[in-house]
Image: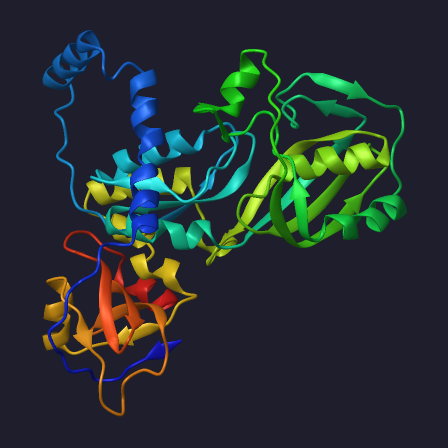
Length: 377
């Protein structure tokens, strides 16, 4: 929804930055820093070795400002943290983070924010997700997927009718106990770390919302294929576990693919091989990595846009509020994203007749190509 009034400015004071968005942006880099530590990046000997190798073989490339979204079609076996590191290297980007972890077992959409797009990560993480997944019946595993060890077994196999009759119990607002192997923190430690150490953790049920859950395939091979559309915090592995328990046959995830994340669809996904090929072409001057980027504002599709004059844009860029007045003032409140001359400027709040900037964007550097901007905006 685009609203395009002309606004006039008046003096005001900027409130504090939105804490939740700031924390979300800050937290997405924690995984990458921890991953660096695990790989020895804080070891002085490895730092010296890396420096020596760069001097001998590969000069260190300068990082640059890159702004936008890459929707990686993550391959099976790759962690989300590793995927971010790979894209950060390909784009030589200064900042990067992902909008929602995807298990190594899973493939599909992993939205990766580069540069100023990291400020819009919370909007993607709060959006709906859609998954296509296969459940293998007859075994429950401690990880609730194929990577774990069997903890319960059964010779029973469910019928399609029994499965479909049960699905309404798992649709709508439900209580779900997260898997033992999950990233939830228990007294400051990740549940999966405690589980790997042999501890059994009592995780509390959490409310989640399943918008849609359907059985799409059911054969005689002891497997069933489902599709689910769900909200933030839902564990598909827990769905397989709980359905199997009620049916008495037990089950675990044997294949999982994410096909939708917020505004990003399968059509937006780019395989890693394609990105690497584009990078090679760009290095030889035959293309541009901008072609792989979606605009920063793509993540903001569900909130209204508000166009302002250049004079008002200058005030907002300095962190000053703008007074909304006149007959063309927007008749709404809440969060909007602000544009000037068709370019993203800020996230702001409308309240008490004022437009108050919360997150200001500086899009100097590499951004999405004009073609991809036209596709989405």
